[in-house]
Length: 97
Image 1 (cartoon, rainbow, N blue to C red):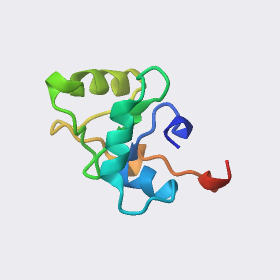
Image 2: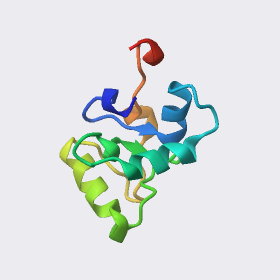
Image 3: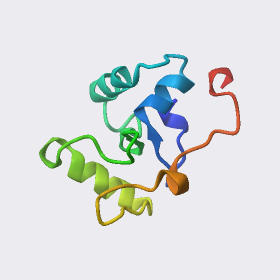
């Protein structure tokens, strides 16, 4: 599911869980992303439901922000990504892809 998020868009952990058919399993998405090689999955495009990066700066948050900014994702002064503007809205049934 995460591989389908286009460049310059983000999805929330809960959104990915729901799209994958694992309702209310947002935390499991985070665990899964932590376990995959970073060059295989665009993990940086997954953020929390408040539009924020969940990782602290030392644990990869700074890298995640830099990667998102390189895709022209804009953060507010408070460090929030406006979900209305940047949240991925699939136009297909992701379970059939």
